[in-house]
Every structure is written in structure tokens, then in C-alpha cells.
Image 1: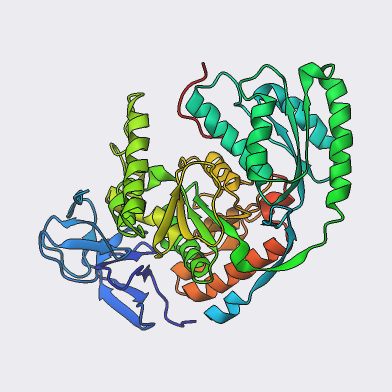
Image 2: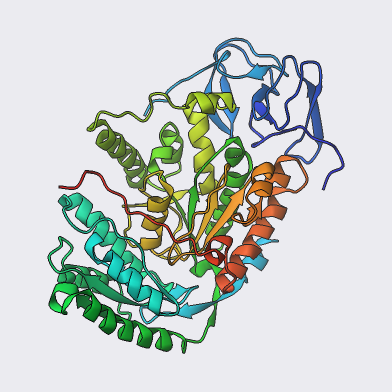
Length: 97
Length: 395
């Protein structure tokens, strides 16, 4: 379907994070096909291990981190586009039940 | 494939006297307890198309567990992939023959025969009589002609096991796509594995079609956690596991969202207890089952699932005695490593080589072919392991 070589993917168009599907080193391009069918890219600000998340939108501390189109946690710090998003900058939060 | 094409998609199935439609034509040799299980194995080995399973339960169980066993036994006999059932009991077990027969007859009017080992001169004599009945059923079953039915007749069970990070990225997403399509054409898809809702139950509950269904979703999660806590264990604690975190999962919400993706994006119309009869044309429904694969699948098969979609990251051989299980992985290394056991490679979605829609079309066509009679890898290899859920130790 697409000639672009991708090394990342996005699950839902509302997501603020995408997922690396190859190990990507800091300074390299992360490339994925957006839900609009267009190739997108950002520069990795840190090493991103395979299947780990990186930011595709800037997030401020306390913002929802969105994957699968749903809240998976809160930004524990300001997060920049291209930054590794994981336990070091995401806080668990239990939505009211 | 657009919606209209799928709506017109049909398969060749077996109409049962109770009105349901099967995609296999098995004779079930049903052991009502562990003490009848070797006998049913010998009987099933004598007859073409006969299947059985090792029923570890059926005796020395607390009432709640005996009920789970009864529901699975009755549901298996009623599953439309079964032409008829020969029930074998020892005679003194908790799941008494008359109770089992009544439970089956409440669900279906299909052919049934039954023998109690202690009343028929022991196992050899019972085997002889039961083989004759099963042989006759197999011959009668062979006369049933297949007819054409809409794909919406299917109740699709969904399951994930041996998961890895690709499950949430591709295989479960693909199953969710099929689930949504089944809902659109008026079929039924079952989302199972209550333990894997934990952390995302509020998201699932928002999708309940009304307050009652949403309440039920919270309830089954609460009850499951309570049952586990009574033996001093805790599900949320330590989840995601260190291994999950190394793999890239950050929070429990994220892990559970990957699992419930098998249910696509449709509203949840009903919540069924384990092994209970699932209605046709229900759209997306939930069944309260364990995360343990063979017992979760058994619950859905007892509910009437004729076909099961199973996503795996690490690869598993899982099958079922009466329900074809189509196995899908999003991990290309796993597919290459275990192609003998896996039916569909969903990894092209991860690498941008195929769209979800393309893979959805491929999986749907595979489902149609399997419904038409094509053997899954697990069927071709004769994998039939299953288990029945329990809440308590034996007495």
C-alpha cells in the first residue's frame, strides 16, 4: 500500500503517542502512516526501544496521555514531541468509577 | 469490502432442529465427571466425527462450581456444531445423569443418548452400547445436507493468549475490526476475559448500551477481584508486570485497552455469565470468563459460539473439541517460528504494508472458508484441549 519505510505506528487518530516498531536511536527519524493515509515523521529525542511509545504531540504536566483513543495515564512532566513516553514521565491514574 | 458485500456474505452450514446453525457436524461424547472421562475417550476413538474432552470436574464441587460445570456440559451439547450427544456418567457423581439431561433438554431438542457406567455392567459394556449409539448418530449426521446462511448467523468468540506487545498493536485490533463488522451486519461477537478488563472497566462500562449493562460490567469485574482476594491474591498489584513494562506497557489501563480492543468500538449490548446461552443477532456482548484461554473459550463455546478468533503474540497451539479456533499473530517472528500452528499473520499492519481494512477482508474470507468447512491449523493437527472455569478447590 505504501512505499514509505515506516518504523512506527499510530493506533487511533486521537492518540498523543505513537509506537516504535523497530528500535530507534536518539536523533533518528520516526516515521509512520497517519490515519489520513499520509506519512508523518518526528525526530526521536531519546532512544526509543521497540514497541515503546513516543510523543507525537507536546503534552504539559497533568495532561492526559492518549493511546487507543483513551486515557492511559497523566503526563508526570512536560513531554515534547519525539520524547520517549513511559514510566519515567507517565503517572497512573484511576478514573472515578 | 463494503458493508453491503459483507451483508450478502454467506456460508454453508448445518441447520439444527432447534433452529440454530452449525459449521461442524460433531458427535459429542460427554463425560459428566472425571470418572467417566477415560470411558468417553475410548468411545470417541471408535467413531468417525466423535469428540470428547477430559472433564476434570463434575464431582466434589461446591454448588457454584457444579453449576459452571453443568452450564458448560449443557452448552456443549447445545452448541450447533454438535449433531447429537451421547452422555456418559459413572453414576455416583455430583453431576447426576438426570440433572445433566434436564439441563441439555432445556437448551436443545437435538438427538441424545445416555449411559450410566454403574448401571450398565461397568465400562466395557457401557462402551459397547455407547459406541453403537454414537455410530448410528455419526451415520445420521452424515445425511444432513449443508444449506446457505447469512454470516450474521455466527456467534464469534474472541480470545487472546500468550500475548506480547504486538497483540495490542495488530492482532487484537484486527479482531476488533471483525467484531465491529459482525455487529454492523447484525451478527454477534463475544468479548471475554474479565480479568483483562481490569483497569479499563470504566471505558468498557461507558460503552454499555444502558445503565443496567454498564452496572453489570462493573459488577463482574468487582466480583472477580473479590473472589481472587478471598484466597489472598490481588490482580491489580504488580500489573503491568516488570516484563510488560520492559515490553513498553506503562499503565494497567494501557494493557487492558490492548486486550479489550478485540471488542472493537461497538456498544456493549449484554453481559452473560460464564457458559450461559448467548442469543443470536446481539451485536457486541461480553461473557464473564477467566483470562485462562482454554476455559474462557469453553465458556463461549457453551454459549453457542460456532467459531473463535484467537490472537497470540508468543504463539499457542490452542484448539477446541467442537469450535474451530482461528489463530492470529501480529508478531512476524512468531508467525515464522510457529506457522504450523498459526492461521493469520497480522504483522503487515504494524509495518504499514497492509491496511486494517485489507487485513479485515482477508480474515473475514478466512472465517467464511472455515465456516464452509476448511480446517484451521489447530483442527488439522487435532488440538482439542479445554478446561472448565472454577471458583474453589474440590471438596
